[in-house]
Image 1 (cartoon, rainbow, N blue to C red):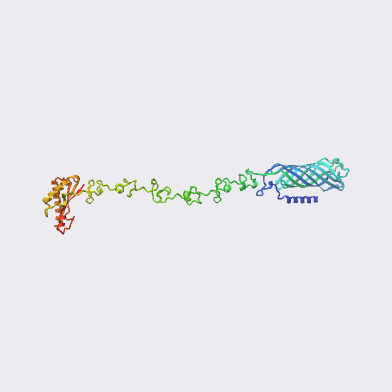
Image 2: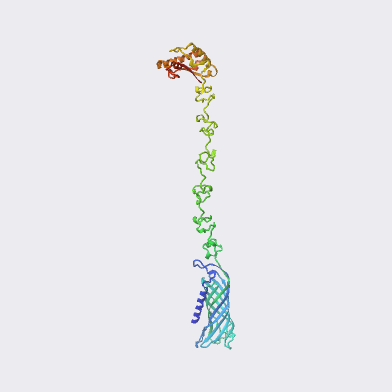
Length: 507
């Protein structure tokens, strides 16, 4: 028996080395965990060495026994899975058992017996590399080989029932190593020729099984086509490229690492898109104004407003001058260039003054003297006479009115001249004018005297004009004395010119 155990150990070691890298898919696992999945029915061929012995029981005073002999078995097997860790495996084999007795014999001194063996094994597979087998075996007698001539088949029990227990290495691999002990429970001696002595089969079997069909379908909990043992996300459907993990937005970053799993992004932003802080459609990496909404044309910045009038340059017809939206970014126009914009200018096409709402200074009589400066705004007159007509004509000149020297008495010629002046003042435009009679003297005499004298002379002219038909309410007087000379008082001619009365018309 010692030699038998040595041979079995050698075979097991030999086949373990041979098959250790030849696992089936069901032996694959992640992180050392037993791979789960679905096993199909499998089957194949088997071959084994049988190390046979006969066990003698009952009264045996002669110490009859048998020496272990080597036989063989070959056949087929079929494995029916009962879940992850159990299976039922029937086998059918042709078995050859060889025997040799020592110290006498009972029934069979030597020779071989062949059987049709039918084991029915229950397999327990606690780990991926090992299984334990239990179950009965039925051996049906076939023939005798190399036995003494007197030994015939009828002496042997035709059907022997045994119990077996064993183990398998790589039980679901393409090649499985197995060994088991077969313990017979029926007496081989059909004739019971030796009294109470009984013979029972005792067999150690070691061999290999070769799988010809059957497969393992690894578990795929999330049904994504990636088995759980390869799937880093076994409960969520994913992609093979990401070891079974999902990438919903297809950005190359698995959902577990993607802060924006439903929107394609970049690794730099943890799976999120490049941010667009100002929501202008231009991402911050190319946006020169990332916090202010703009346009692609201006690299993410707003359309510029050079003149800061609130109208961007693209809409502004006057981009460098502040204006208003009403005028497309231009200032309110000033058509006549008078500094008063057209909206406030009542005369937008004619230059004017702010005092007159953009219109020119009015000149009702069109004499070239604005009304504001025109003493006679509705009657034409020369510019140098403040817009009023001069109180003179071909036959009357107030400067020719003379007085008796040193007095306010008019000369006869002066009175005659004033009658012509009265006619002039009561004619045409003059009849609507007021007249200021201004008296002037030369420098002879004191200043006080000359003022009084000039006033008396002005009053004398006024009285004469009233006498000649001019209404008195039209006439006022003033005396300037020697204050307003028009000639040199150092000469007689100059003094003569300075001694004068002027009639100044006003409306």
